[in-house]
Length: 123
Image (tube, rainbow, N blue to C red; front, side, top):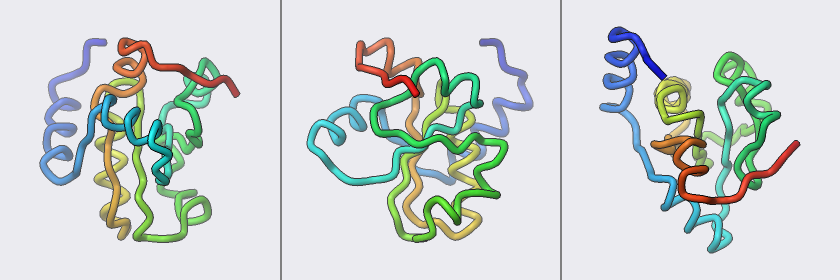
């Protein structure tokens, strides 16, 4: 995908303030049965095409509005992902501003997950 320069600068700035993880690290944590909230921030139409096992959906357009109802604990560990890691980085920064203390963005997103050959779930 060809992103605009301003968008990429915005993502780069967000990445300076958030924690990121890799697709491989999240797969290993899921395989170990570690507990954390895995949240897909893509659009509903993207979610319907498949998502990471055990993920919940809170699209980037509504995550700030709905996060407190879905995950009220500000200290809960939340791993966000999107298509490639850009929207999840922006959403992670936003949730941190809302007071969430353990938000992580999965760099590489679902594209990286698919490229690694990891399984998807369907809704």
